[in-house]
Image (cartoon, rainbow, N blue to C red; front, top):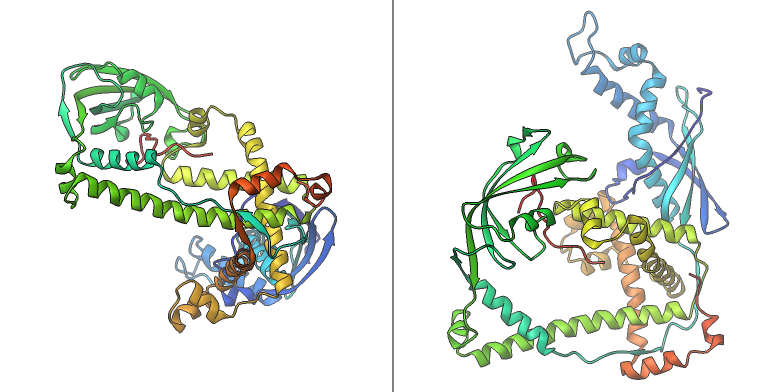
Length: 485
């Protein structure tokens, strides 16, 4: 075995969803040791056959790139590639590509729920015929000491249709039937503008980012603030300029950390004309009168609120169990979970063309302030997960494959087998366990008026408090060049 060892920190979130049954054969042994502060150390052995199979795979990839006398390109035997490039060099590539998978495999093998990123140490590169060994330390979900979790009295409000929500829905119907009419006046908030634009950086035009006949709505937060400010007051035929500096996380790599100038040509200013809220509008959406339309909207609003009430009640039941349980929650876990939530948010924003710096600018926060605001939510999510895991254990909840299939609408043996072979069945089983655990709590809970529940909270005593464990909406559709509208 090579005498060199390496240590690295994995800085990404590893998912077990894609692990196949074949890949699971790679792990020979996983031994775990609990550590203080809800951490675990694991010693992992990857079988020699798995290491050799991966070495051959990497060698085959390299064979398509190198040329050796007497062999056609892509036809160089793997053993010659290994001798030419060096076994150690190729093993390093194997580790770079597969260590994350082996780590995820070990988590599933040892039934660990990680919190935060692991610290992984590689015990050196194996010699021929030897297994690969590595260890990792990672935070895990803390164990909850359950208090009362059945027969709880929990506040539940009655569903209602707020008049404000009804009017908002009716206004949305008016907007769907609105007309856009060209006006000669300067543009103002609420107007729609037809725009041609060009981008310049360092006095060079970025032709790949020019746009024609783009429809911008002013005052709705869907356009960069610098552009809105430049366009307010503009008339058809006018040219306006705006300077924008894009952040390091802009979806288009070519625009990252660059200051660009927009040259905007206003081709038309259009005012939104809403139809009257009357029987004619109601007829346009299939109702005989405005009164009938309003009644249907009110019914739908109340039905939507009924679903919200159910979700709120389930959450309140879970939080009531959390309040009565003891959970030692390390501050490091909270910090790690807050960072995970933020990273997931950034990925969702990036899918909509919104970068990190643009989001922070719009919300008026620094990243540190945002993470601080996320901390209590992150702590509560960990408490909830710990409590649900404890209820699963206490109740012996272990759904069968068939129960998992039924819960997630998998109606064929072939579909179940695909989940099984794709490594997704275990993940769905864990989701169902948590759902069934919460069902047990909710089914045994007694709903009481919210006012009565709040009165009890005001009477909460220090003795009851000792039972407790220790411890943003995104702007919609912000447009940037290079993203779809």
